[in-house]
Image 1 (cartoon, rainbow, N blue to C red):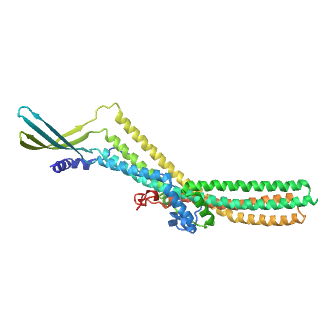
Image 2 (image 1 turned 90 degrees about the vertical axis):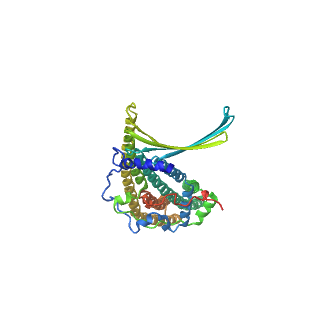
Image 3 (image 1 turned 180 degrees about the vertical axis):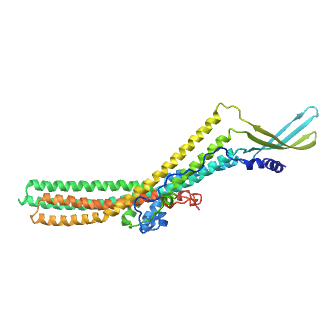
Length: 480
């Protein structure tokens, strides 16, 4: 009986539901200015397919482990996963408004009948069905907005994965660069210490003036202070990496010390030649575009609230009566009422809701276009930095080699009494600066690759599976 009534309600309203559509919604997609080509040169020698997991090409298994560990404990990924679950629940709730609602009620009463001299029992059960026919597509528009936001939330989860991978790769590279600078500073401090020792012996023998020996001692102190400062910076960087990955510090320190630093190859990955291809791989732009579509649907939903509403209802009831040893039962059903409501006056509330929805749509459009411009700028900047680091690498290496050769020659002349300590210290500073520049340039190049990885969207595509298809973190897996 109940199914029959609901079927009649559905058949009666089917033509109206098929004709329903959101009224007056602005366009769900808007154009954004994208350049025809990149102004900066593109890296060559790699595949675009390497973009998604470029760190696996570096022959660095520890980095792969660190990125996986950080993605499991990342609060940003947990937040993105939570927002995705909320968006999925919102979509279910929005879709539910398109279907009939069914409620059940049951009552029972037992009492004494003084006239009949016995106990009476009355029981009744009722099913109530109601359905708001979506005449002007308001509810359907809300469902569409929820679906668009669900797609955007799934893209944001991928964006969080890309950000975590980039952050860990950059932090690991910075720690290794810091250790290389620490080795350079330690070697420089030892060299300055040896110079100070020889100057002190020469002073004691009367061959060196006290001022010259004092200069050597000051140079030694400066080198030791620089080495200590560099060591402290490495310790700070290590503790930051511990916070990112969630590893125990002794374990992480041991693994990092056992894994030699790997210099990044000349080409880690390639990006598309057309800016539109690269921007299509940006999950943040996809999410912003979905927000425009969601805001458009909400404008249509707000405008639909200003039009008539039709609600169909029906009931099915069954009753049972026991009185004086006799039992009786009865069933009843009713189709209706059908309620048509027309808003006449609300003090401008619905009009204000339309204006607010339109303002949110305009904001979403402006943010989307601004993010497109920012994305183009990020890719261009990363390409410029990458090209600049590549062009300076050979010159920096030649400069370091030349200054080192000059330092060895100056030290030999100083030991033979043919050069002053001032000359030796000047050449030493130049050699130290050149060696430091080589190490910093390697880090700058690696940072440019990481920035390009983030700017290119990390190899994401709209069909990539979300966290509902991904394995759970270790902490969330069921124990056997």
